[in-house]
Amino acid sequence: MKAVRTEATAFAPATVANVACGFDVLGFALESPGDEVTVRVTEERGVRITAISSDEGLPDLNLPTNPLENTAGGAVMAYLEGEHADFGVEMSIRKRMPAGSGMGSSAASAAAALVALNALVETPLTPEALVDYGMKGEAIASGSEHADNVAPAIMGGIVLIRGYQPTDVVRIPAPENLYCTVIRPHCEVSTKEARGILPKEIPMKTAITQWGNLAGLIAGLMKSDEGLISRSLRDVVAEPYRASLIPGFHAMKQAALDAGALGCSISGSGPSVFALSSSRTKAEAIGKAMHQALTEACTEGTLYISRLSDGAPRIVSLR
Image (tube, rainbow, N blue to C red):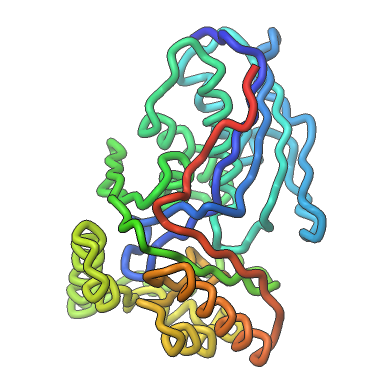
């Protein structure tokens, strides 16, 4: 594979994984926040991360610049090796959300790096092919390859991961009037801790309930059926266990539902919490209610509002 351009900067969005009933198989992209990665072509083979910076106000991330220990670096290394590239790259990463937020921070960096790199080559790969390389990067952060964050960060919109080996990802159409409110409490939840708290097995009755909710949510999205979406946004597998790790979760969820949310649950492993609604006006009202509930319960939080159909990666600059 040859490079035909010298430098690209790409943005990739934050994501909400699981979406209540779709544990490890469903996710969607937000409009913001997200990460930016600049990739520059070098004659020397390999990957070098020259800088990692973050927006003002974010905690010091202390992320590794060794590409073998960095999700963006690992994803780009996998791409270059897998496509037999005849060049190397230097990368600089701009973080716009903290790690451990439950909003796919590591996936956003990996996705932005891959989208930027893909813009430099003679024959760009499909988004679906990029997802495979993105999972290689995600494995560095979580210990296993999974696509429920990196797939929507690369493909945009709502994405169903039907299966792996080979990876089978399907983009689900989002109703134009579907909005998401996300509140990020100013605390951190370890992905490993959030996974470790889950039971290894669940009863058949619980599994059947979750399957029905997931099928109902997919059908509701495709039919733009708000009632079906609302009835399906229920998680009986992870939320009952992970809720205890999130300050003020139950208060925020009740506040969201009282304010008119279609449903509310944990974003990824937490601590971020998301709610879906049928208009920006409702999304804003829900956000105010959730923020007030969080503040009264224990801590401050940062609020994000996004239309689901608008979340997608993009090229910021190219030369």
